[in-house]
Every structure is written in C-alpha cells, then in structure tokens.
Length: 213
Ligand code: DX5
Ligand code: ZN
Image 1 (cartoon, helix red, strand yellow):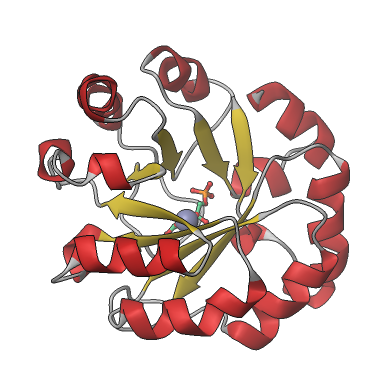
Image 2 (image 1 turned 90 degrees about the vertical axis):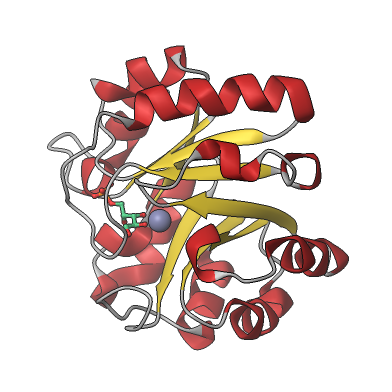
C-alpha cells in the first residue's frame, strides 16, 4: 500500500518540520489539500505555502484540488512540478480537456469522485488517467468518519480499470486508519491518504505510516 499523508492535519506553525517528518518516516507521496472556500466550505493554502511544502518535501507532491476554477489552479501549481494533480469530476465541465492539459504540463492527471458519484462515469476517461481518487468523506475537512460504501465503489472501479487501463491507480481519501486500510487493500486500492491518523498517532508518524503499509 502506498501512503500519502495529508498535511491538512500538520501543525501549520511548524509546517516544514511536519513535512520533513512524514518524508523521513517513509511516506510515498505528500498529499496537499487545496480548498477555495467555494467548491468546499473551507479555505486552505495557495501557491506560496505549497512552494514551501515542496521545498521541505523529499517525496513527490500529490495535489488535491477542491476548487471551482480547476484550470486556473492547475496553472498556479504546475511550476511546483507535483507528481499528481487531481481535480473533482463534479466541478469540471470538460474533464477530458483538463486531463490533456495536466499531462501536457508533465504532471500525472487524476480525477476525484465525491461519495455520491458513480465510478462508471469515468469509464471513457480511464485510458487517459493515471489515478482515480475516491473520497471516503465529504471533502472539506480532516478528521471525519470513513464512509464504508467506498469499498464497494473501489471494487467496481477496479473492474473497470482492469478492462480499460490497468496502469491507473486507485487512491482513497478520508477517515482512513489501520483497520479500514485492510478492506481497502482487498478491494484493489493502491494509495491511501491519511491526515489525522498519521499526525495524531500516539506513537508518532513513523509508526502510523508503517501500520498503514
Ligand atoms: C478532506 C481532504 C483529506 C483530509 C483527510 O477534504 O481531502 O485529504 O485531509 O484527513 P483525514 O485522514 O483526517 O480524514
Ligand atoms: Zn485530500
């Protein structure tokens, strides 16, 4: 299992320290939640802070956009050379076009589905995607409860991926812990995002990441 800790649960007063800690502890990606206060009822960080995160990180960035104007934000973050940029299917009129744009910038494109969105909506986009991110909470906040129906959704998505593009990864984000990660792995999930589980683990981030892997 690849592990992408979400820095949303880090101490923003010591952000560089907390980014270095997860990288030193063996995470695979650094998950960065960008919220604009419109698509979701929360506001997080922009390019100035994400640039500082990129400097502190020795692992690739996984930027999760929760914004209204996706293309504008892709242009803002592309110079930081993240590994992935993911955008919400629910907020994009022309997802196929945006996927091509992200790839043309040398970044791996990913699409995010909210809890209600059918995985079948992606069938004819899968061949162009490197990853699909399934939300297992409503986007906007860390520390929420895992929605178990994402397991069935991951299984259905896995079947479609095997048919259309076996290289496409499945990532799950929200409420992930050392218990539900086992079900996610069995359902074919490749990458888990975990914020509060990693940063609030009583034995520290290293033990948290190890237990998810
Ligand atoms: C929620 C974010 C998540 C969040 C995960 O909108 O996309 O990445 O930080 O936090 P936990 O793991 O605490 O649910
Ligand atoms: Zn996220």
